[in-house]
Image (cartoon, rainbow, N blue to C red):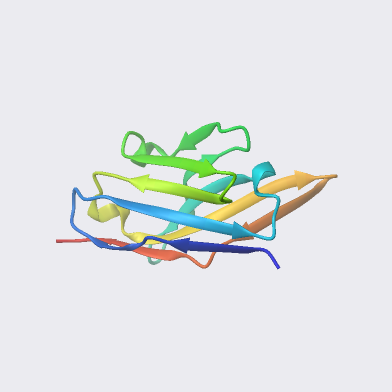
Length: 119
């Protein structure tokens, strides 16, 4: 069974930093596009940042210049470095892995990690 396990969330003051990690198991990690999504209370889940198998990245406008997504295929881990955090970044952050193979989409989610930005 595929597992995506997030870690690194917590409480941080505005302007602070956190690094989220997502460790994958039981998948061929290198072929997956990996992403970080957030979901604030009462709102839909939305993409924060993504990184393809080739290393191309994309970011939501709200986090450009503050967040950096990276991956380590040897460790089957994707990271989200979050700097200059704002109260509006408060949400549950989810790791996602997606790929297509032989016409079938494989899409997996982690359980989420809470990030709270507050003084």
